[in-house]
Length: 165
Image 1 (cartoon, one colour):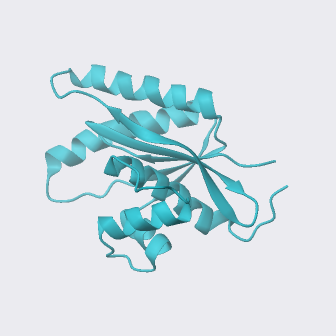
Image 2 (tube, rainbow, N blue to C red):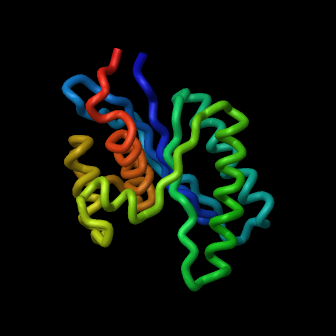
């Protein structure tokens, strides 16, 4: 049985996502990627509802067994961190409710798994995502590339080298 991996880069304004499956010869196949966007003029609860509905739609459409979600990185901007925390909570709840097993990774872990260097630039991550998934061009928006990077990080951390049936 093949495993479908959903990667999510949480955000209130933009939540990036990617969906990949392991393919033969230890490669990964990109099934979908994109971003869930919520306008700033919407009330917080309405923005969270949009994120929840879109996450549930992704789960219903792609039926992932696992999700790789970016762990909240608390920087100096408390307002941004709180907004991301709200979105992240809704995402984790939605995935748990759907029975999707959740794995969390910090940005440092993702960068290290993809490039071997935890301080890699965003352009290096995008380039590795493009090459690893054999895409014609780097995925846009950046948040979608991050969602795909989370999928790859999960694969490298948990599945690489395991035989797929």
